[in-house]
Image 1: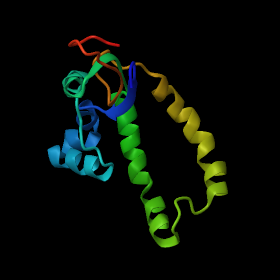
Image 2: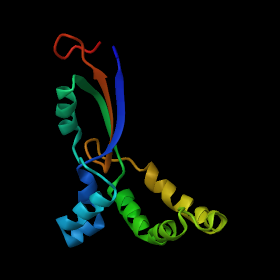
Image 3: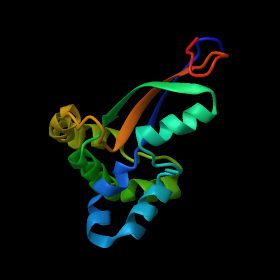
Image 4: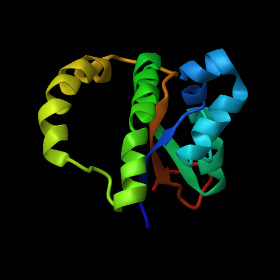
Length: 144
């Protein structure tokens, strides 16, 4: 649509670099991790800018988030979630004991994770990136 905006969050090329396993076990680990989470594209904002331009969109803003430490916490938590995946397979739903989870896990995990989420990333680095683009006008690079 005219003056249409695209707002998207995507994993960035830094995500795999930040993984503890990739740093210690090599590239195959990063590829394995990304395949599990269905990360098909890991681009920087500059690469996304070129991709968007091919589709008549101009990148007007970007913001990286997820520090290296936050990515590594997510990585650890994904291994800790293996019992939940087994539960899903066996019982057909994710949380076997939701009240137990609410009482035992959430009270200590929220205070632990909140400071990690509030940390700033470097301007052009982070495990994920928020992109804002606008549709171009008929003349090249004219935002309508």
